[in-house]
Length: 251
Image 1 (cartoon, rainbow, N blue to C red):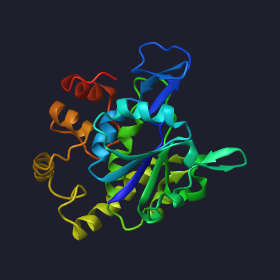
Image 2 (cartoon, rainbow, N blue to C red; image 1 turned 180 degrees about the vertical axis):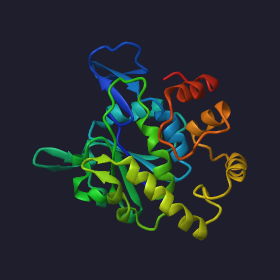
Image 3 (cartoon, helix red, strand yellow; image 1 turned 135 degrees about the vertical axis):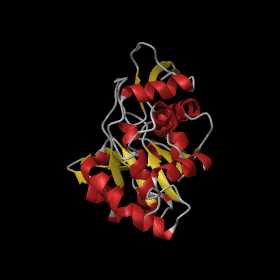
Image 4 (spheres, rainbow, N blue to C red; image 1 turned 60 degrees about the vertical axis):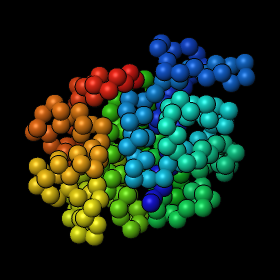
């Protein structure tokens, strides 16, 4: 199983020492209170990705902030480890996440982080994501689901991740092409995986339903319409709202 390293701040959550309206949680650190908002889809994303990856949380923040936050964000404890500032490497005053020190094969390791500078020592392992602060309509995490499903099955992620960059961002057109190019090859090597997307659409729905492999967005869209295109990155906020309302999720 490959390893997915997840940043916290502005990737999964946004935190502030200043009071914010309707925070998801409030963390007490010494005499300070930290107000935290969860990025839309963060909890579903963690739950779903745990089926394909060993999850490691890696933050440049302090442990007394990271642990209580993750206890609330992921109450199922699906992450294997939490690494904090002490485990970062300081380079020119910046805290860098050196993935080579984690004891994992780099060809099997991916980091999802809003700051490419955090992983510049292993750029070929990094998936940059747009920083999130408070947009309730944000759906960036959902855009990475299919990308990560496919990368979970390739022999060396460092050979594929650079193909979908555009500067310090992901080019979703390139990502879409990579997904379509890789699916037949992955299917031929391992037909019982999530990447078995080349089946006819009806068989695919049955297969993923039986294996409980639908992603959060797919569950919502399948219930909303039978004509959903799995490969489209244009999921709407209404789909996300439907999923949340049906599962009593308030984010």
